[in-house]
Length: 311
Image (cartoon, rainbow, N blue to C red; front, side, top):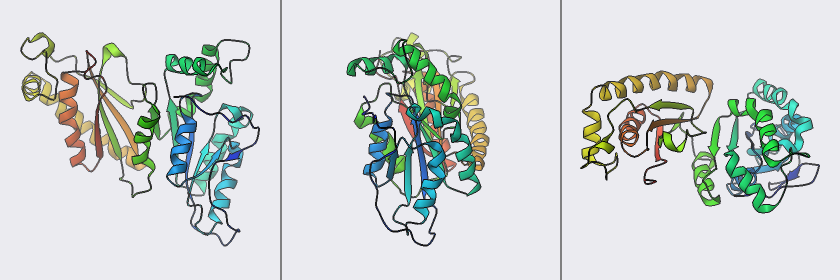
C-alpha cells in the first residue's frame, strides 16, 4: 500500500459540504489521522471521506481548533471532521499538544488514529514508488523512518486506535476502519483479541500482550499437531493442563478492571494479544475462550488469529 502524497505547502481539503456561517451548533466530532509516512494515511483519509467525513489534509495543528469552530457554525453540515497531521507539517507539529489541550477544554469529542507499519514494509513501499522519505535528507530511507518514529513516539502512545498496515492491502485497511468510523452509535469499548506466534514477532499494534507458552504445546502430541486451537480436541487438551483455567479466570478478571479504567479515560479501542510459539494451538484456544468473557461484560469483541495457517 502506498500513499498519494500532497506536495503543496498549504492544507488541502479533500471533501466536505459548504454553508454560510450561522449560529453555533453542535460541536463536530473530530478524528486526527497521523502515523508513519507510507503506512496508509491517505488511504485512511479517503476511507473517512467515503463515509461522509469532512477531511482536511496536512492542516497545521495550530489551526485544528479553528477548523472545529468553523464546523460548529455550519448548522450541522459539518458534523464530523477528520484532519491528517504528519511530518510534512513538522514545523507546526510542536503545536499539536497545545491544540489537543484546547480541544479538551472545549469538550470536543476527538480521537487519534495512528497508522503503523514495520520498517521493512515502509522501505519496500518507498522503494516501489522510487520516492525519498520526507525526513531522510541526505541519508537513507531507514534514517528517515527512524527519525519519524522518534518524532511521533509520544503521539503514538496517546493514540486511541493504532492500526498496523504492514500486511494489509487497501481493501483490508478499509475493512478495519469502516466499523470504527461508519457513524453508528458506538459501544463504550471495542476489543480485538488477537492470537499470534512469538516466532513471527510481537504485534506492533497490541495494547496488552500475554504469553501462553507456560502451557504444554499440543504441537508435540502427534494426533493434535495437524489441528488448530479451533478444534475441540485441541482446546480440551489446552484447558485440561494445570493452570490453564486459572489463567483464563484471572486474566479475565484483570481485564474487567482495565476495561473500567479505559472507559473512565474515554479510550474506545484495545487490542489484546495472546501469544504462543507458532500462533496455532494454545493462543488460538485461549483467545476463543477469552473473547466471550469480554463480550459478556459489554465489550464489543472481535477475534483475529494472526498467524494461524502460516505453518
